[in-house]
Image (cartoon, rainbow, N blue to C red; front, side):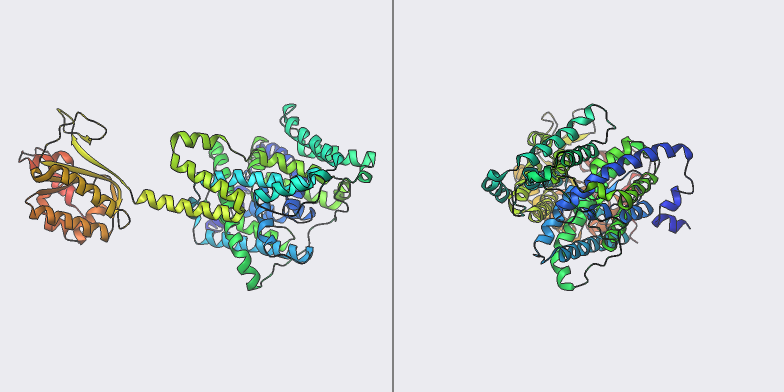
Length: 577
């Protein structure tokens, strides 16, 4: 039973449900459900699908996440970024008909579900760490701009070719701006004003729904379809039927790169917001791997019930939490509201102008554009700033998929670069103490002409040993023939591979040949194990391995070491027999 609860968290919280949580869950469920109606349809349209599929995507997928997910407040469903990525990925296939387009969307949801579920089962949740914050920030801001501009055709009421490149979108808008439908544009601007500023009247106002009602009444009441205002038209009623994705390997091979991209990006977005909200409550634990399973199951639900790729969204999750959600029952209540809408209320959306849905998307993505982080990084970390900007510009000009791939590659390059250049310090004695500090930070230290004390921070391995060696050689050259004592401070060395061990052995041999005394101080247990395996302690001599810098310095200076415990045992003990 415990194992079942681990993989189906609903079995843990539902039997122990507290009545005092019902009011908050009910309020949050209804509020988010009301948000989901216009957002679901708007995001589906952004993904290139009929709006009804946005409502289908917030039925079974949300229920499945409520069963398998670990977050109590995460609101799963269509989001702007994933919708745009879906449109970009499917657009590359050039589908012949709306039916084929839908088939590709279902297949994409299935592949994303498969990737996320497999990552969760294999406990690969740590993979998301390869998407650094600057990369996500740059990608998100650029994607938000592209998403917003992609809605210009609905806001202006003009025909524009589909594109995910900023330069193409701007040229297309410029060439077609003369055909703007001013009535549709005015309705869209009215919707933006309602959504953007309605919250100032009262935080709990469902402003997207109010904008929808405003648009429908305006078009229906004044017969504005005669003015060329584009509306949704007939929206099918009823619950989603069963559907099946394509199992063609050719289709899979084309969709796989975008599926991997969406899997990682959507999980990063979802887990980030879930972690922030969980930090406010702390009455449950988030499990990254189980979250992958939950999101994977949600996408399976989208694939087999006429939806398209889903993930946890920032804005809806924040609203869910602020509205009082305590458990995933809030999400189940949201689904109930969507089901009622699908069964009885879809005909009310016939006169919903597409410019209103464009307004919903535009306001939602506006909050994703972050100008503060680049400014902060420019002042604090130039490397991360350029990482952010390259990702940002690449996404804008080369496309959504290319941009995030470039960002991920740059993240890995940055990690490798930093790992290949560990911090190394030359130490010297703080006057009148037995404390040793970095000579670059403290200019008034006592540094003997015949001594070289080196501290290496981090791991020593094949990727950084060359950098370390060059620095050590430079310091040795500075000392010249006066050098008589070397201490390698390993207090901050967390691991040592065979390449690093081999190189350090060569250093010790070379120093011994020159008549230089060598000692090792503060090596951790795992590092001592490696030193023993390589017989380095034996070659160095057990007398030259110490628990701390003070003992090592006193020994090399031929001073008496006064300790009331067996320090040598703590310096030498290893698990290696």
